[in-house]
Amino acid sequence: MTTMTLNLAFIGLGVMGYPMAGHLASAGHKVCVYNRTSSKAKQWTETFGGSFGTTPAEAAKDADIVFCCVGNDDDVRSVTIAENGVIESMKAGSILIDHTTASAELAIELDTACRRAGLHFIDAPVSGGQQGAENGKLTIMCGGEDTVFEKTEAIMSSYAQAVTLMGAAGAGQLTKMVNQICIAGLVQGLSEGLYFAEKAGLDQNKVIDVISKGAAGSWQMVNRHQTMISDQYEHGFAVDWMRKDLDICLNQGRKIQAKLPVTALVDQFYSEVQAMGGGRWDTSSLLKRLKATD
Image 1: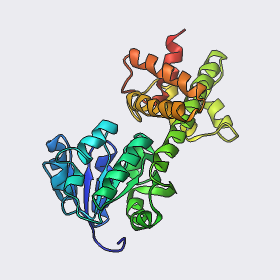
Image 2 (image 1 turned 90 degrees about the vertical axis):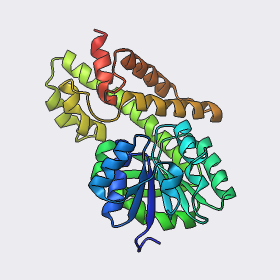
Image 3 (image 1 turned 30 degrees about the vertical axis):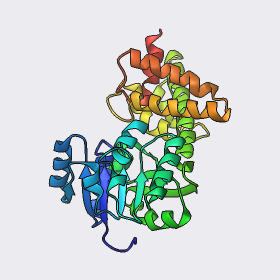
């Protein structure tokens, strides 16, 4: 299945889905896309070829694999199990892959719906942001059956540097929650470090040059310190999206009785960034919140 040209559908052409679907087309597959704003779908076909459907069901009707990358649980339901959703038209034996960062409960719900319809499902949230999607360097955390994953791993690798099966349906989403929990603490720590360095009269760039080579180093430090020092936040992964993700993490934490005190605190800090008008700022804007409290 991975060595031939496939009929694919991609639902959702946001900052992530648009380039991801493009990589699939560039790999030689026949791709039909759907987006709520049809002009975006038309623009995509003018760039990459392929075709677009006027509904999710229309886009998915001939697909061997249907990919979905939208906003939240309700958005996923609206394009999958609702009227004119992809499950309505997908052919028997085809596969639905959801790249949306959503709840583990939704993953299990979709897995059940797909089984009833004679379909297969993989929850496959991604990490790496818009830059990773555009460069084909995403990290994908998957939940589903081994045999289904094996049929899709190479295809997802067209836009990923790592594709890993974490367990049964829902395991991908749970792993993505761990990812976001870790990032929340890292970004707050980096923000406090840069804030402290400035207050102490240190050269922030020199500080980062030194400590990034040691135990404090991280992707966030290497890729975000310069824009943070320059007070530039009109880029990257938006605070609004991060709060959506952290809400998923905190809800899951309550369900499994996992204490997440730092995550809850950082979520509160992001709410303050939103109140500053920074809902679309990059998550590294936690530094701007610190400076605003002076």
